[in-house]
Image (tube, rainbow, N blue to C red; front, top):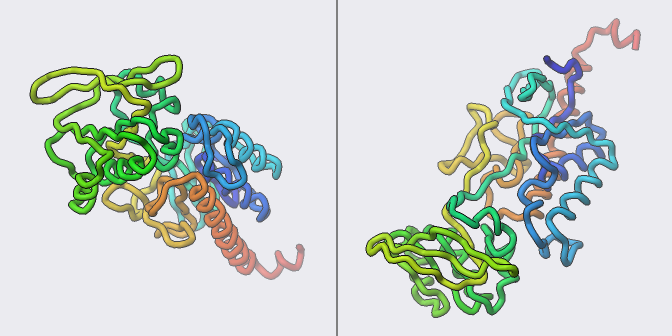
Length: 325
């Protein structure tokens, strides 16, 4: 059933970007609702420790998410815990359809649905996420100073992260299922010249193993000889790709070849009033603070857009109505 109220803004996604958008939207006095199908904080909640968010030298992902959510709710932000299933653009307003059959009409929409790292789908991967299993070397590499880590993957991201981790770790094993990397030639040359990195070609990870203190080894298999063995390690970094959560992106919105949405500097798409922020947006860096910044920018841009829309509608009202007002 459609909601009769016409909202100024609907935010889909309750991660750092969506919540930050909620803060700035409420401060701009926009009639706003935030929709989140899971728990507040998104992937950040699963981070054992966050040390690179300004103002917090050391905080768990769950605590950081809670603080941002509490900040947003302190302004009276309305949060709906339900799944959004479709976004329908319109000329006068946009519509967000829900799994429970409800619909929210709104002048502006901010999509903050993020993305998900591609998973190996092996034993121990989910169980030890945040306890030695990571999908971000820049985020978690600091915890593996002078330790041994395994990087799984062979593309540009895997190579870049392996090189970054080599600055911190004592030893980096790079596990790749083929005989050569898919990364660019410059990155390949850097990998070859880095003495801390050892390549394990034609090799796949079959499980991630741990003890009381977290990850302690990975089980590997040679794809040519079928040889299997356990490699001791303090951490497993998985970089086999990243999937943007773009199923709610309406048709007609521009995306790049990898499925990330292309926006302008205001985080606005090519459809007026539709904004995309965080890990769903095509950009250089994917960090918590960047997502929060996106949320701020999109909310301020949405406030300007809504003001333009509502002012135009007011100007179009009959003179007798304005006189009665």
